Image 1: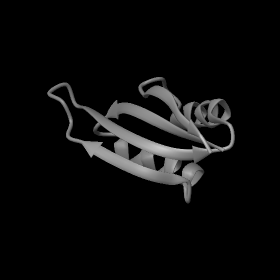
Image 2 (image 1 turned 90 degrees about the vertical axis):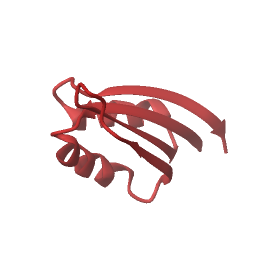
Image 3 (image 1 turned 60 degrees about the vertical axis):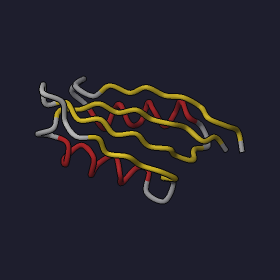
Image 4 (image 1 turned 120 degrees about the vertical axis):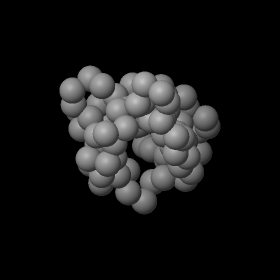
Length: 81
């Protein structure tokens, strides 16, 4: 099991729709989450720590959910449990 940190940047307007689909995928695996206010450009940032069996597969699935390429992911494996 890995602890993965996701740094997600997405447009503020569509944040709720994208986050609800992401949450369905990672429900019960979230260890920590932080929401940051949007920038002047309307980009919102969310940082999550998630327990995952395979971090690469998780990110691939989340990218497919997010869809249109407006979402940026930065992944860092914090530790192996």
